[in-house]
Amino acid sequence: MTAPIGVYIHYPFCSARCPYCDFTSTAPKSLPHKAYADAVLTEITLRLAAQDWSNRRVESIYFGGGTPSLWDLKEIARMIEKITRSFPLNSKVEVTMEINPDQLETSTLKQLGSIGVNRISFGTQSFQQRYLHALGRRHDESDSRHAVEKARCAGFTNISVDLMYGIPSQDPKGAEGDALLAAAMEPDHISAYCLTLHSGTAMHRALELGTITLPDEDESLEIEEAVMSALEAAGFNRYEISSFAREGKEGVHNRGYWTGRECLSLGAGAHGFRLNYETSEMSGLRYSNVPNVDQYLESTGRNEDPTERIEQLGARELLLERMFLGLRLERGVDLGELKAWSGIDPAIVYAGALERMEREGLIARHGWVVQPTKLGLRFNDTLSALLC
Image (tube, rainbow, N blue to C red; front, side, top):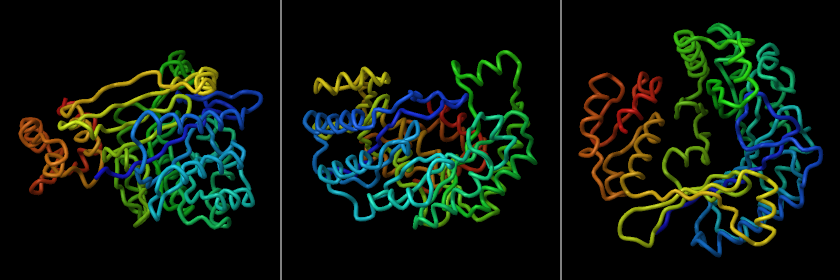
């Protein structure tokens, strides 16, 4: 029996591009609300016809971007309605919408709830003006600090906020203060991640020119430790490297990425994952859509598949992914489950790597279960390197 899936819809438009962002996004003068919705609806039809996604139970729907809350509500409703008509849904399906904290008032949030959105993820990034300014964010600290309150007033009981650390001019004390402010807003979930600057972004160019500086490696570790400790002390459980939640509020959609769940991803620049159930040996594929919005609209307008690239994955490659992604989770991986799933025994394939990880204090083994230690979570890149 095939497993449940997630559905991801990428909305590539923003009101302004953040200087650190390297996602597929653009800030046009006018937004093609209906045209883009028509294109995504066409892609759903095309993928259902070309691949056997039918009768797959959907346990999460995620609207990401870009800034998907800029999309007309009626178009968002069309997306949800199409998915509801095309797939059986989990009785507690999670439907998440990413939102900038300065964009929507309580009345609009209520409308989102009325069309099926039941989880809000606010792109707060920081709760202090100096850090928001350093990140080039358009909202202010007041917007960040009142975002959760607005969503609560609109009836939402599952709310996440983003917290970025390792920001220019930040020190451990400042990062800890920001984490405590995030926790004080009483969200259900906090995604806390270190600022990473990619080539081609405005902030990366500023870093190369020397107009901004980032914390050095030692200070970055101190900052990370300050943030993690503050969130855990505030009652948030760290269930994944960058994810903290109150009991029962782990992100269903994002957890799917770490556990190898398939994802039907739609929209310009979207990346999807599908297993092949028609062969005796485990296999699958990852696909990515054309990132250019005009090309995406043209392809779907001609009823053509907007896929730009496909990567075929064999059993060994899928097992490797499950191992290093699973070791991002606090609960770790069950080698017995992975053996049954892939047909390959990871305890044998990765025997040397696992022995070294354990010797260096990066993992703890409990029978078939391998869990990253606190040190292993901090130096997770080392775990991935040892597996490869």
